[in-house]
Image 1 (cartoon, rainbow, N blue to C red):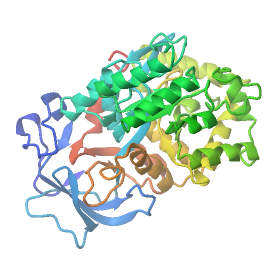
Image 2 (image 1 turned 90 degrees about the vertical axis):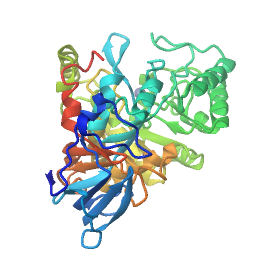
Image 3 (image 1 turned 60 degrees about the vertical axis):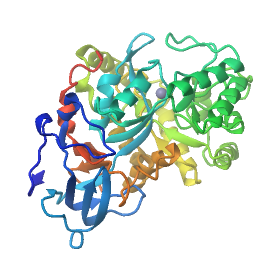
Image 4 (image 1 turned 180 degrees about the horizontal axis):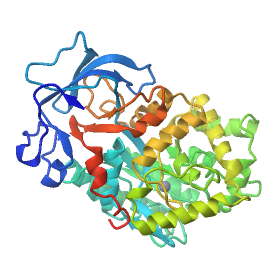
Length: 472
Ligand SMILES: [Zn+2]
């Protein structure tokens, strides 16, 4: 990055006083910052604004007070005297990613999910994620506390929509409560909303009565509920008023013929029916219509399913993992690649076709990564991979970027401030060395991530956790 004038590579000692909207950063955070000035001009940039509109060449953006104060052709918009100016010739600015199925935990051992929020929030930011919803919580207070620490400038990471611990019925997960009845679902929502949770996630063994009670209580507080379902069908959840469904259609049990109410027939049983589903046939089209009529958004999490599918490339980012976790995933990868019987050989391409059909019919498709499964979904890297997979699914790069930015922000009710690039909006921007509007893989080439106008250094964020992701 060439800095033409007003050279201001700020270190901890030289930190410029924060503007009204920005927190005062702790020393630990200032070490990750490479640009922090009262006014920053990004000149000669290619802008992909996140709305799906074509890229605009030769743009200048003036960042002031955490916002995009002005934007337009570089011939017209001039940087005020003494401004920190960064020439982005040949480079692209996209909105900070807004992804909605993120987690601050990772599978570390049999049935155990390690609380890795400390490293994950840095990796998410390094990958270009400036806003995210955690889509389920097995950390207790960690999601809520990290959200606060980041907001206060004491940790580097995206702005977090923090989810409460999962809403679930009797289950065999070690880190998940067995809710007994609908009244407990209501109490769970009340307690965690009071503690600061801003969204909720229903899980595979919840009953319709529990889901109904949770949705009612959350909606009273204008909070949203999503679900990775199994015991409750997508159609039932839509009628109950759920706001969002996770994992595309791969968690749908709507097409299991002998499905018992409130009973999860097993994820695989549901997935066998999905693998056999015809996207053009009436039963699927009726479900899509119901979801759209009820304004239920759908989250695509192709990154986690890719790790289950034979013949797919090794996922990016494994080098940041603790060596044992890296090795553990590599063994899983070998096992997956040798599994000739894997249902994912047909299910993964079907997942793409069904999601695409939903979006093309007018449904609201969101993006997330889900760093769970058998490992290998590494925050930040996986968010970039998710955009690549949306292009493989059949979206244009501009559409994929919109799904991973403005759609997420719109669902979260934050689109007035973030999710797209326009004068007046918050300066959450990713500077990319390349042109992702043509070659989506260029999203991996992140040079700087601006959050509220402050430019973070992805290399430093990654270096600070590299080889240790798995410990904290
Ligand atoms: Zn998940």
